[in-house]
Each structure stands twice: as C-alpha cells, then as structure tokens.
Image (cartoon, rainbow, N blue to C red; front, side, top):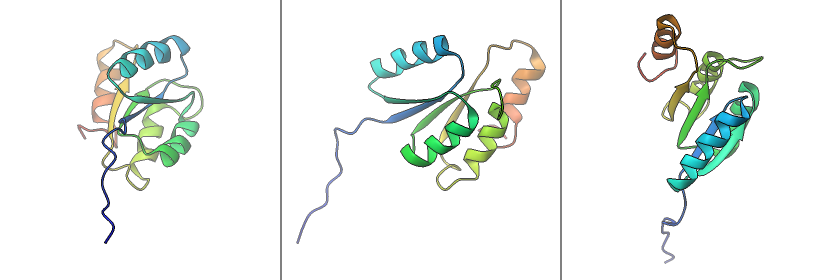
Length: 112
C-alpha cells in the first residue's frame, strides 16, 4: 500500500492584485521574507484568472484599479470554487471614511 504524505516544503501562496508597481514590489519583498510564494496580477480580470490557476492562500486586493475594481474582483473570486474560503485583504491608498467602510462591508469581504 502506497503512503501519501503532504509536502511540508511547499510555501503558502499569496496573490497580489494591484496595478501599482511600487506597491507590488513592496508587498512582494515583505511576503517573500515571510516565506510566501508570490504571484501578481495587474488588474482584476487577470486576478480572477490567476486565482483559478494558483489557488492562493491569501490575496491582497487593490480597491482602485482600471477596469474591474477591487470590489468587483472580490465578488468574482468569492463566486469561484474555493473562493468562499480564501482570505482577502483589501488594500487602498484612500483615507476617507466612506472608502474604508466600503472595503470592510462590501459584498464578499471578510466583515460582511
């Protein structure tokens, strides 16, 4: 009988969905230092496709992106197989209360 064992050397995967290269580089450096394998998508539609391919453990999702914004991307990921359980952290440079609350209470967010 063959034994199946989990690969304990496999790194957790983080997906960064953000159109800002500086932000991506900063988050990538921090996540790699924390032993994550990091994947990047520059827009929401690519982020949803990449989610299906890599099945990340954690997603950092920019709120403001051209095309599909972070809220739409979050909803789309939540509707995918496995998307209902993945941890999504919404990232924004906006500092007004309305934007912060929208991130916290948007459909598909952790707080909803």
